Length: 161
Ligand SMILES: [Zn+2]
Image (tube, rainbow, N blue to C red; front, side, top):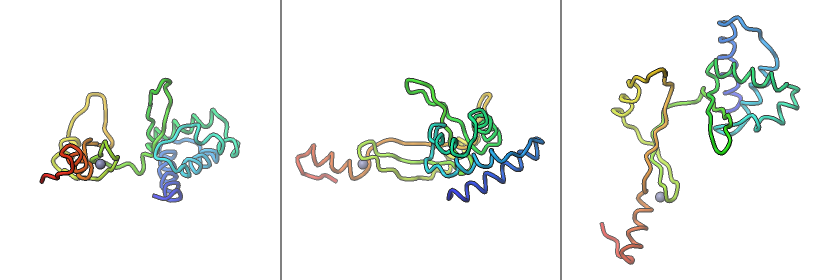
């Protein structure tokens, strides 16, 4: 999704949410949505949009109220990450989809895989006090190239099948 497509889709979702909940339409919210749509990171923090927020004359309380609204409207997901200090991160909910990936812990190479049986198990699972939206599944290991290099190293150059 391009930033323009993302903005237009988000605006559509926001319009529907505002109508449904009989809220006020504000220009600040639309402007903020546009700023967020232009962030080219999969995950962002308030810090990442601070300069543009100031440029657009959007106050800090308006920023936080709008972010809350975007989360309620399922435009954004809020992720809490604790790395020394707890900070709030946001992720686009609109382009989120299920993913299953293998990742090599030696070279970082990633690839998609599909497993319908696994997909069904995860989607049909019931969670206590929780409604799932989508999931990411990572399987860590060693890729073929790295495995070959490892075997070569361990056997002194003799490659076994
Ligand atoms: Zn590898």
